[in-house]
Length: 106
Image (cartoon, rainbow, N blue to C red; front, side, top):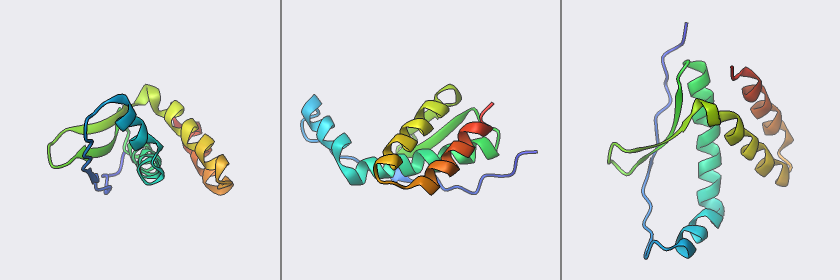
C-alpha cells in the first residue's frame, strides 16, 4: 500500500525579460537553476514511486496552481540525465541512489 506523501511541492518564481531563446538558454545554463531542477526531479520521482503515482510534480509556478510535472514514461530518462550531471561533479554515491530509483520503475 502506498504511503501518504509528505513532500511539500516547492514554488518557483521565474522572471524572464524578453522571453527569447537566448534568455531561456541563460536560465537553463544557470547552475543554481539547473541544480534546483535536478534536485527536485530526483525528490519528486522518488516520492511518486513510493506513492504509486503516474506523474512526478517538480514545482508549482509561483502560486498559480500550474505545475511542472514529469510523466511516468519519462522518469527513467530524467533520472539518467541527473546521473549524467552528477558524474560530472563526481557524486557517485548519489548516482547509485538514483540508479536504485531507476531500477524500481516498472
